[in-house]
Image (tube, rainbow, N blue to C red; front, side, top):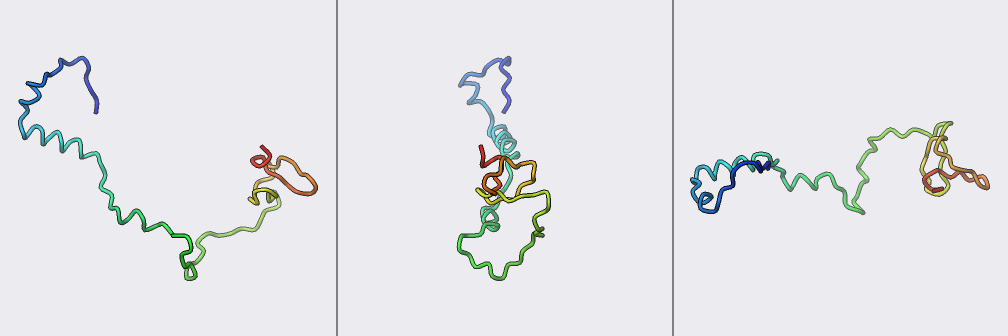
Length: 99
């Protein structure tokens, strides 16, 4: 909430003089910016370890490794050739693993 530091300050006596309707209006304004989130919807997209996924289908198209890519011998991820740090004993290592 923005505060105007140049405005004259109200002491405790003046603070107690606010009407009930004024206070309710302020409370409603402060809460209007919050979003209502249903707690039951938060956990619907999470899968527990060991869950039975036999009926699930793969929804991602898997492409074979391209000619300009390599598999790192340390992290086993596929990287573009520009990420190749070095090759030792025929094993390719990416920049992230070499650092």
